Length: 121
Length: 149
Image (cartoon, rainbow over the protein chains, first blue to last red):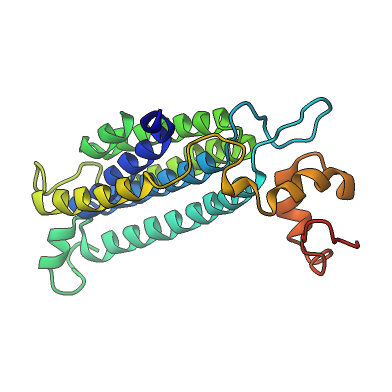
């Protein structure tokens, strides 16, 4: 019961590990952004899981419903998703600019080059 | 799990598609966990806009990932140390789904009780996000039992 009661949180930790591994190990910048998004989603699932009450319903007022899940984590995460899209688009825009200037999206190749590559642009 | 496939696959186009599937699945999970608004936002924004943005980048940048293959052991060890610490921390969280968990005992009952009575907005998430957080009622912070608005 103890183990089953934390099942959601274990899934969150595993997703977070996948996302973190992608950010660290993958050289490609677009792949890093995807990893960042997976990491983000794991945090979202953590918050929404905390707000859930078993047998409760969506926090929209209706007749005959007594127990609602906690609406406050939902508010937080709604904002966080929108912020997440903003950071994703900024990161992808930076990736495009880096590709235009250096001709590569790979971490190791970028570290080896010195200054913008004029021959490719 | 779809998330692992997203990491492993080297064709970035497939990765973008798999990431859209992953976002849709997490939106379904949010719907199951009673977060209708969050599920809608995640489906529209995570599966929609993020995928379009990644595809737009792929039209400007190379489609295939280069660089070394195989596992990166230092990174893997860092990830497992972090994951181990988090698993240890997570075991101290309250059991999933009980109504008397500490998170449900603070200000949340105030919003659930009064959002519809005070504002006439049936959706509590929208009420908190737009009405309570707005400047109109900023002077009236929820103090259980002592609100004079």
